[in-house]
Every structure is written in structure tokens, then in C-alpha cells.
Length: 158
Image (cartoon, rainbow, N blue to C red):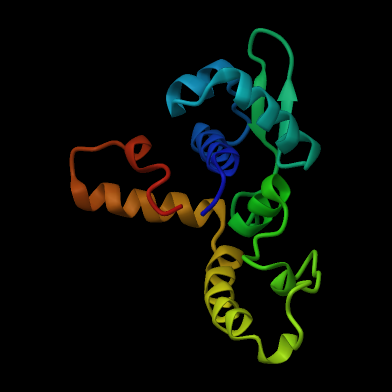
């Protein structure tokens, strides 16, 4: 399960992508539109800015804007930036491998084998899917549903 912090980060990024290239939104506006506590979102936006995913502008038309091509920003990249390793066990992590202290033979560990299969399947999807993919898939559902606007389904496939 992803953290609430990652959910909010992804929702904010999707909202910025939907705003359009060059458009900026204030933290307050994003928070209202996505039902995110403003103070929590402010911290998340600073993390996203440090990671180079968003930029910011000052002034009347200021706020945050998407600073990466949404077609190249994978969900796995965002999750790792916000939460750290996405592996369910430290011995499976691709970015922060650590041997489990209670495992005498890693190669034959039943838990590692089963969790490894699950993790590989999940990771394949998370590394392949981008922000642009998530929005396109949500828009497809929206068009099939009829009356609902795309903002209703912004997080439908995340």
C-alpha cells in the first residue's frame, strides 16, 4: 500500500498536468480541488520541487507548475522520491538492498520468493506507467462513463 503522502503527491502532480503546460496553481487551489490538507501539501510540494518534478513562480499568477514531461515521469519514480524504496522486503529492493537479519539462506527463503514475484509484477507496472498514462486511462474511463468530467477520475488508476 502506498503512503498517504505519496497519494497526495501523485494527485497534486496529476492536477498540475491537467492544468496544462505553463499553467501554475497555488497550493491552496490544489488542496481544495484534491481534498488535501494545505499544510501537508505544502511540505509535499517542496519535496516535489527539490526532486525537479515541479517548479514554482511568485506573484499574482504564481504557484506550482509541472516541470517534467508527464510522459517520462513514472509512478515508480515519484513513489521512490516520496516514500523511498517500494520493495515489500529490504532484500528485494533495487535501490536500497539490505539482507534480512532473520534469513539464513536468502536464495531459498519462501517469503522472499513469493514476495519477489509479487514485487516484480507490481514494479513492472509502476515503472512502465507514467503520469500521462494515468491521466489517459482515467480520461478513457471518463469518456466511457459519460457525464463525469476528467477531474472525477484523476486518480482512478493509481
